[in-house]
Structure formats: structure tokens, C-alpha cells
Length: 282
Image 1 (cartoon, rainbow, N blue to C red):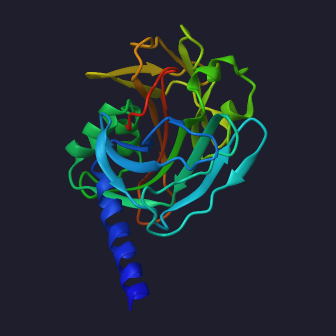
Image 2: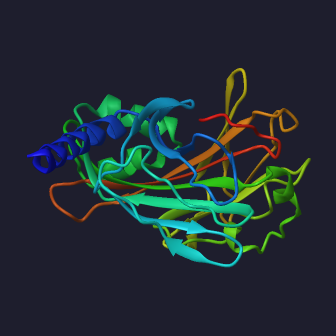
């Protein structure tokens, strides 16, 4: 009886997550602490919302391809339905770790063309206004299918050592997600700018918007377009303050040939904290 109730509860959670993701801008991995003792499990929430504020969800079967990457290995994490926080990776040795996760597809319907245009404008996808007309798509009940790809960086032991890692360390490498943001340089080097490459199916995406959020006492949102090599660069804001949180977000839209959908969007986020970040969930 208890097992049946557990499965029913997880099913209800899955139903709740789907519309919540659709109604919010960002989907990200939210560590409760960025600096964790060596040999213990990190606690990472799945969070949906915007401007670093959002609802957390337990692990569900909508999530997949969950890996923990360090300087020498990439291992698939063991998870269970209903785990809360959703991800609890064990970090056995000192150093910087990357955790990755993807979601299965979810449907979304824009009831009016104005709502669709508002979404396009916010994420720098205005070129799809004309494409929508070219395909003779409807002006209401526009159907989209979307997929999420998320990453976060956490530390076992002191975070101060992360700045010494070379840019070719495996934690900064592409991980094969459908859409992903990949650091060009080590973002934990003091005084450095933030440069990321946007990859869609492993190929660089040019002239596409990337959003960089920084949160301390307030939230700042800065946008930049990728160049012909798919790279966007940002000045780091408030980098010397101890509890600064960062998130990078990008969206790519493509024509969807799977009926009844018109469009497909793939989303990518990276979350990380400054080199001196303390226990401060985002």
C-alpha cells in the first residue's frame, strides 16, 4: 500500500513540474552548498523559476542523463524516484565537480500570438516571427515541445583551489548535451571574464542570445550575442564578493516536424558561485 501511494505521489509531482517549467523562464540545478566536505554527499535541488527564485522538485522520471564529472572520470549518478533534494552525488576526493542533467520533452501551448511574440522577444528569438509567418503557422494555440539541459559546479573541500585548474580540464569540456554552454576559460580564476561557447548537437551556434545572471543583494541580467564561433563573453559582476551566484542561460528554437507541434526549443543553463562562495543555495 505504501509503495503504491509513493508511486502515485511521484506521478502527481511529475504532472505539477511540467506546467511549472512551461510558465517560468529558467530551469537550473541549485546546490544547497557549493563547498562540501570531502567524502560526503552534496545536496542539489532541481529548481524552476526566474531571477534565482523558484520552486524545488524531487527527482522524477522526467530527468535523465545525470552525470558527475571530475578531473579524471565521468560517472552516471544513481538516483531514485522521489529523492529530495533530487540529486545527491558523493564526492570522494577533493576538487571541483560538474553535475549534469537533462529532461525528456514537455509540451507547451501559447494561446495567443502576443504571448508567443513576448517569449521570442525576451530570449532574442525575434527572427522566428517571420519564420512563423513563412510556415503559415496559426496565430493562436501555437504548440511547442521543449527540452532542458542543466549543469552546476560544486566543490569538495575548499573552493579556493578551483582557480588553479587549466581550461582543458575535463570539468570544463563539452558533455554531449543536446544544447549546452561550455566554458572557454576557467571561470574561477580571479579577475577573469566569463566566456562560453553555445553548442547545439555539438556544433557552434552563432548570433544567438546568452543571458548572464548575477545575484548578490540584487539580481542583474546581462545579455550578449554569440559570435561566429558561438562564443559569448561577459564582464563578471561583483566577482570579489563572497556569496555571488551566477547563472548562464540560452535557448535555441527549431522547426518541429513531430505533429502536432510547430516548434521545438532546447534550453541550456550553467550555475556556479564565486571562488569564495560559502554555503548559500540558489
